[in-house]
Length: 191
Image (tube, rainbow, N blue to C red; front, side, top):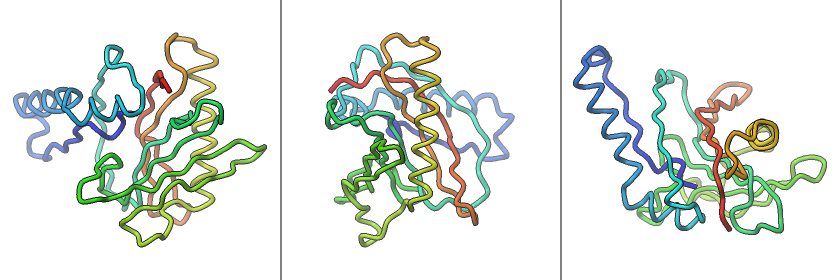
């Protein structure tokens, strides 16, 4: 779906007021939308290249420990006839789209059967088969995706070509395993 493919950069604290450093980081992040791996991933997920738009999100850095990071899509990228949400998750600090070295992310389809019903597509190759997401995480992400999908796709109709949303998220190392939503984008998934 293209999420997680683009450059994320932290600006050192001593450069936060340096106009040239800020512009440099913004240019690198913006240009990363057009790198080859972005084209390949968007093609794999059926995203129309001519409709790709980029935006830059500037946010503070997180000082709490992150357990996992991922992308959720409010559609089934594999089968149009089986509605589901798709979760693609990696260990903290790893890209969900980075298959280098044979790494596999955790991938889960979540169906709505009155309550979330997960189907594990793959477990992360970096955890020895141990799940990154627990039942509570899956339920919280499912609820968030449903709410965002309903808001952006069904109620707002601002993006006439969008048929789902994708979100980038963190699973935080707190007693409650807080889910932190970093960003949300309406998108047109073509299957």
